[in-house]
Length: 239
Image (cartoon, rainbow, N blue to C red; front, top):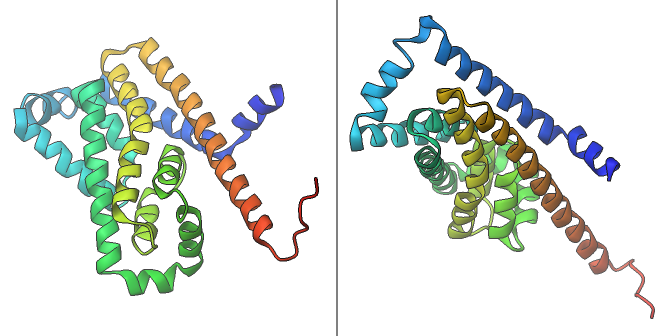
């Protein structure tokens, strides 16, 4: 039991994610409390985003989709969504922006940049294609649940693999939700200075990371077993 807990906290995915969560919380707290940012934070967000109706929602979705399409971490946009719109709406809008950004990258890579991407990232493409070729939607969900990783590179590499667009995009949309919800909750907690919301987001982040790492290892282990079973050198199983 203790060994499993230790291995979880020793994982690079959790350490990077917690560091990122801490950075978001610190920056959000500074923006919320320092007078220097008064004209930038609530006044600007209230006038341009939160109280601007459908136009404000449109601005946020376009901005978040464009930012994530060029490599902005999706957790940052979820944090800003929670800060501007609250937990529920911030989660939904940031997920929508992430899916749009993912779709743009995927199809640009597939139809416009395929020759360049295949030359530049041949080994990475092989690994991604090998991982996603069986149960692509479920495995895409697992990839998106992981807090670490390069979202932009994943979208680009997937675009030139054999995975079908609908499987990758639907898996991404579902897999984005837990992480986006956690960071949107953190953003909302910063706005209202709610310690319990911030603490809950950290707890949920740890749980989500533990589950995602476990699922990823299970898929990798099952893949290794399949490869060994298919090997001509493997011995037959005896009763």
